[in-house]
Picture 1 (cartoon, one colour):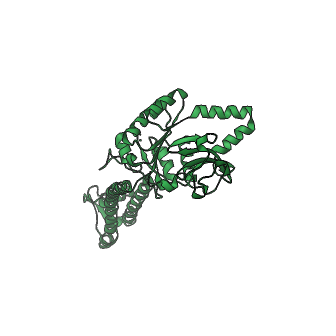
Picture 2 (tube, helix red, strand yellow; picture 1 turned 60 degrees about the vertical axis):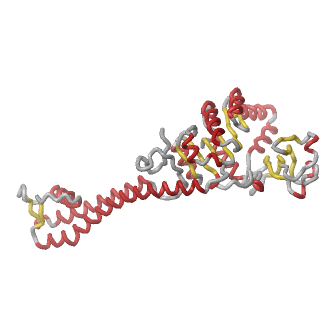
Picture 3 (spheres, one colour; picture 1 turned 90 degrees about the vertical axis):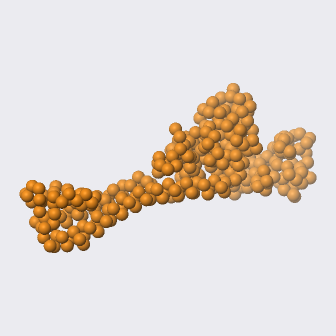
Length: 364
């Protein structure tokens, strides 16, 4: 996300080759700013051309001695504004020289300021971006890294946001500049580059990430990315999506904690919808958020300690997670809830649900 680079503007300058984060900001694009400055320069050029042409009788052409035409006026404006000054066309009358002093010279200075200011701003922006990148990375802790901002990735991030994960705790990595731009529009910091690059992952502070989600388009890329991620961060919760079920074992052996087979999942949902339309609708409802039913994972509260999962009001407990081991609701070990347990529940969708493990996020 080629050598990783920050876009826009182009990073083919002082920090070329160092992937810098692209933070979501609302400002004019580099192209728009460049067009504005070109139009201003053309306006200044046109102003000098008109001043000279309208007062052409006060100027003399020392080379051709045939008067000053519109082309001559444009030529004089160009060489004057760029401080070239060949001297072949000169103001002869006193008032023309006064106009050059009071009008043409300030316009020439304004043009030089515009050129120098553009150069200085480019250099300043490069330095400011490098400083922002450094400061941003120093404060990044316990964040979620999403690798691949396609349809699956965007759905995953939307689910995280609906479950209380703040946007500043989400970092996107994608090799496509269009995907990076989309992530910025949605309010997320993003890197453009190859997620198998250890340098890029280090700059994304992946060793300090809490969670990594991989949703790239190729299973071989998923396996290589999983291996690289696991080498840099052995403690992060790593979820990967694969397209083919035969690659699930390889991805698990590479270090993924959970593997989702997209083609099988879609196929099962389509099959269930065909056999039993209502069953398919319920499952689709569970997978969506914001209305109807939803599946959630949360910590057991103090009031729920010692209770049987069936006694939880307003929710249906599907599983209990104790000491990082999942126990289904029908197992004897899940008959009594304890403080520190997590439960997977089906409940009515809430507009402001809490993130799972929120109480223990700082310590995990």
